[in-house]
Image (cartoon, rainbow, N blue to C red; front, top):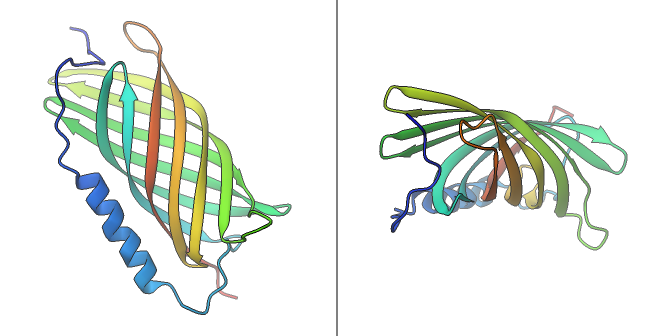
Length: 189
């Protein structure tokens, strides 16, 4: 039995990831202190909730993802170390993403609440279709932008190009646009 990456025909999206992203964005704006100066605080912990729109092998899918991060100070910026867990259910096809990423981010000189970043991701992707299971290895670069509304959180958008290795048929590229909200928990001062 072979897993098929692409399924021809129209795809239906119920908009759940977009609705979750908007809801969490409004939550972040509601709990952000109005007097806070936007910017990352080194040694903060982060929790990001978001969704993704991915295109791979001619098909498009949506999913929901959670990231946990720790911000290490590096020069004029920070080095976020991230762990991401993602889940996709598509008919009989279930996918679990377990990714680890490192990024480097620094604020724009003209606006300290805008933080562009670049980094890499790698990990494991077990997939199930009925009783058949295969594990792929996604690895690749990412670049994005975080806009902080306070020192407690902000919004992000990230583009990824992951090479999926160990595919039973052939290795292939997957391109994704990820978006969501990040809540930050700075250390006690």
